[in-house]
Structure formats: structure tokens, C-alpha cells
Length: 265
Image (cartoon, rainbow, N blue to C red):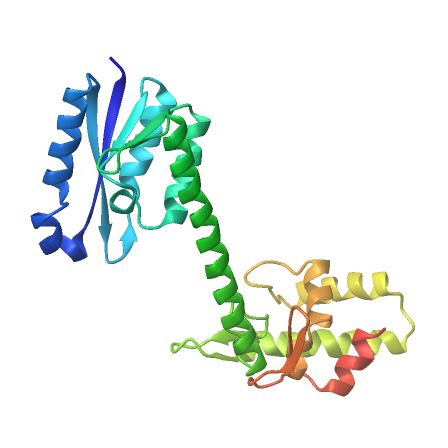
């Protein structure tokens, strides 16, 4: 008899519906019945809980741990849409099962990955997942592009050194670090007038910043931090995203004249 694990999943947001149709008890009973009728050794039933739209994935992690220890031949689910939040999640898990040579059986859909037609059906689902992932990526890119064109930095959690996010999530000037940015530009410009090489300027700046106790996000400045600051056009009100170049809606902290004197040198 092949060692089998049943995987069930429930959403706390849909408890009313699930209690009457495809809830945990229903799934568990159906999967247990299938195992008995097909002479499978059901060694465990694992449940994934989805709360507030987010899967805890504790059940999946427990199942993976069991698989990697050995002794799991088959995973039973009621159906793909019930067991996984999206086709993308399914495709990722199905690839994992194939890598570990574990069969997947979708009981209500009558699909077994060990059979050619079953492998084909699961393959089609994975293709749909790939398409779904690409659509999501394109929508995200489109949304980001629109924001950039409107002068809004709406991507990623980090903001340039010299700025911060306020309690409303808006990007504002951080007075303390902005003063450090101003110091770096003015010292760089001063050293340019003395005809110091770029390497010498950088070493001198690092030394001066350390002497004054200036930090880059709590750590000592590195040469690449200085390079990035001196080449970041965000400080003069400009913003790039891919091939898009535009002005942003945030307060510049550096004059274009000083920036260009230092940046092009």
C-alpha cells in the first residue's frame, strides 16, 4: 500500500459556504473514503488555513517536511481550486511534487499525475498559471509606469537617502540625512576645485563623514553609497523608471547647478 497524505484547505472568510459544501470535514471524509476504496495507506491529513486572504502555508510546509523525510508516495486533494489560492501557487507546488517523485491526485476532478492524461491536465493548469503570472506582472508594470508618469514614486519600500516616509506613507524630506547629502555635494565640489582625483575625493569624503559621525542608515558610509548619492537625480526633482524620465512631485534637496557640477566630473 502506498503511503498517502491528504491535503485540505479552508478559508475563514468563507466558513458559512464551506460548512455546507467543501469545508474541512467534507474534504477529509471524501479523501479518506477515496484512500480506503483505492487501498491507499492514509498516514495523515494536513490542513492549510487561509485567514483574511492570506494563506499561513503551515500545512504546506508540514507536508514538504514529511516528503523530504521520505515515506510519502501520494498527496490527495479534493480539487485544485479548493486546495490552492491560485494557479500560480498550484504550479509551484506541483513542480515540487514532481521533483520529489510524489504523485498528486485530485479526487473530485478524477486527475492523477501518474497517468498520461492526468499529467497533461495538470500541465495545462500550470500553463494557465504561467499566463496568470504574466498578466499580474504586466498589470503591476502598467500601474508603476502610470505612477511614474504622474510624478509619483510608487514602487518599493525604500526611498532615497535624504528622504523618508511619513505616517501617511508620503515621501518627505528627512532634515538630518538631507543635511548629510548637502554636505557630500558641497565637499565634493570643493575638492573638485582642488583638482583631486575621484578616488582621492571619495577617500577624503569617507574619512570626513566618519569623523563627523554621519551614518548611512545606521552604518558607516561606503564608497558606493557616496557614488549612488552623487549620481541620484531624485535630489534635483527628476525620476527614472526604465526608459521613462520625468519630474517627481517631491521637494528637491539639491540645486541642479551644484548637482551637475559634481555629477559630470
